[in-house]
Amino acid sequence: MSPKRALHPSHPGEILREDVLPALGLSIVVTAEKLGVTRQTLHRIIARRDPRPVTPEMAVRLGKLCGNGPRLWLNLQSAYDLWHAE
Image 1 (cartoon, rainbow, N blue to C red):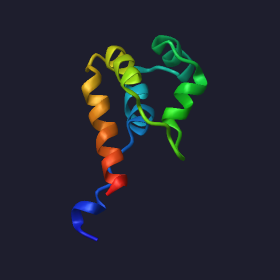
Image 2 (image 1 turned 90 degrees about the vertical axis):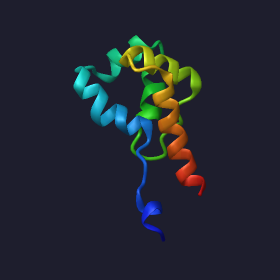
Image 3 (image 1 turned 30 degrees about the vertical axis):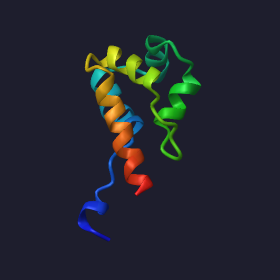
Image 4 (image 1 turned 180 degrees about the vertical axis):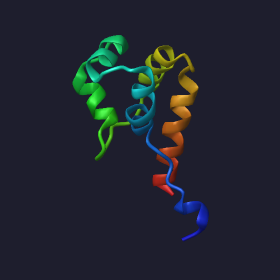
């Protein structure tokens, strides 16, 4: 295994769960409301085991919520998916 392969990119849901929501001081319920999705939808994305991917639509919502645009979220998801595909 090459050293580069050993670097496992984080799923965007993990970043959302561990970094973004605590920094914004938002609960799952409030975040889901702000995103316009159900709690279950948000829980599926931030799940520790088998998280759902961030879709382009969700990336737009997350980008608006966080003020960083959808490309960041799509790039995070793409890096995660590519790492697992390789």
